Length: 258
Image (cartoon, rainbow, N blue to C red; front, side, top):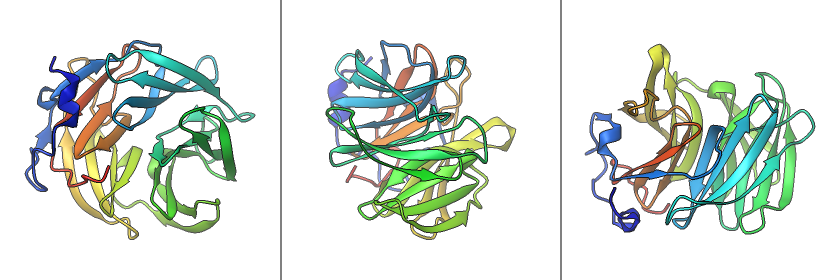
């Protein structure tokens, strides 16, 4: 395994130069996380810490974890629950906050969108949505959420006011989304158990680029669940218990602002 200093290398590939299919063997770094990660849902990072959401389906509990990227150790975790809502989804960090959808574990249900402090994990704000929200991205002005398998996108302002709702026409069941360089980068699953990472134009949410992905040596699609970007790199955490973080150096992301 290469040193984690590799995480801070500059973008290695320009937009459009990514491989046709991204495979696990293309990862520059593979980091094992030392902690009980249950069923992984979403990730984000500041380059020092990795925040992870997971759900214990049998126990009806959701969690927000913090891992140290230097060695993969778990520093803390808290439970996430709001009544019948215990399913956290894909997350997004901005400034001093982490935005987390916490939903009932079924489609066409309800969720709360929580804003939590990065340093303390304290709940600072939340609003109710009358749908299951499974992932979220954040821009300086808006929050973009995807419902169950991201069949629809919701756009709210940072106070929870609904701006619009639009159908997802890409065919990709997004599980985690991020915003960078005026694009939404989203990962999920296509029919026939195929996985892909997509670039969507914002605010139209039109598909502008797609990169297919392969599977890990455990047979798990790289885009099965958690994904983020950082300084032009693609980070993916597809596996559950004994989770491994795959970091891809470049991948044509064209998003050096994250």
